[in-house]
Length: 507
Image (cartoon, rainbow, N blue to C red; front, side, top):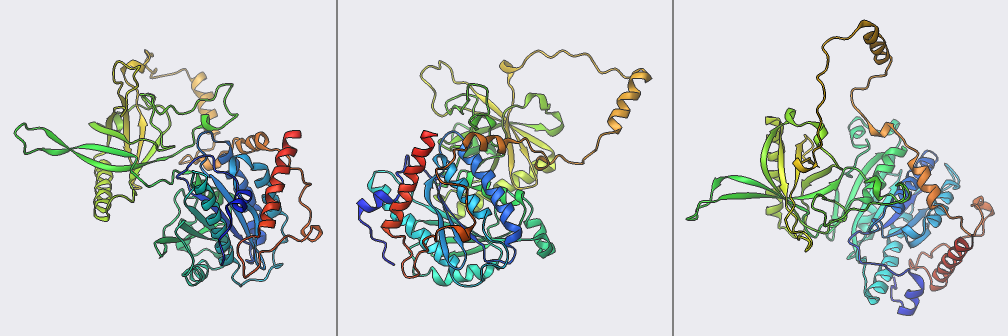
């Protein structure tokens, strides 16, 4: 496999990187040779389009810097060479339309090495791209590959183990093999695993220091959408995000007896996307997170180390919802690779012990945060306070809590003990007519946000609507012996991108 290209060729082949990003580039490989592709096609297309329109609409650093899409039929086919996602939603949408237009069940034979070849070809393209951007003074040094298939995930993993032994995997951070199953085919123990989850399972194999994660997932829009949304999380693991400081329970041995602090090293994760970060969804002015604000903590991007010092414990029933504000964040034990294994393990066990003890006592924690770097315009350090809530999922929830300066007067009359029957009766009747759910599930509510964002992002391409594949000119198929696209082909892709940009500007 010859990966050497002249710099002038790679400059024409790949887009320039705007800024260095810790987020990995993404290669999505869709295997359509499986027998249940007819069921998966529509739900996959909808879930992918929904998630990517969300990613394109978020302000701030791009969470998916580069995206490439491969299709595996009789052999691999690159539907979308590496593109900057935010600037190319129309091209992405056209590729998704091609997915929707594919022939359904039974049209492509199973078997072969198409998936492995797509992985090798994608890695080769990314290697060329990385060499080009490094020469230009910027870098996007890692890539993650997600393989969607309805074939046996274990067989795909075995193929990858055999075929990737002699391949350069330095830039490859992880491979996800996602086996998409219909509910009829799920074993009882798989049903729980296939529910919409925010963290993919980590059952897999390590090859030359790179992880292969094997996961089964149900073929519905919500499950696949949640899978693609994991791409929006902060993937940087160079350092921890948060130090949670607790009193050690004892005194130091120094001459001046001072209480010592126990430090739990944690990472922050978004529970919700901030609606203010979605372009076009606010009235006139768009608020972005101010990292220097004394009352602001953010999980994206993770640009600073936060320190929360626990100052009090609170009874869970003693915290009024009205004094909590802002977006919640998830606190979890850090996965920073710079810590040694023993420290990571001890830190994780200590974190789990804290969660368990808080649940047992029915406590919450009150913590104080001090800005690390004070702005010159501030004469005084402003403290912000947070409530930390335990859960049985080995995570903590943190939310900002009101302080004296923010609290508004609220003198309200007490609730009357009795009401006239002529008033109470209609109210009871109205309440009795409501459907009652034991728990609130946000997945049951839709706001048409996806439709709105797509309408804001959509820019028609110069080419016509996707034609039936039997009427289209034959697309170039990469040769088996050369997994790297030729310069002529990549020049064609670059020219198409320029024409598309001109067409969008004119229209």
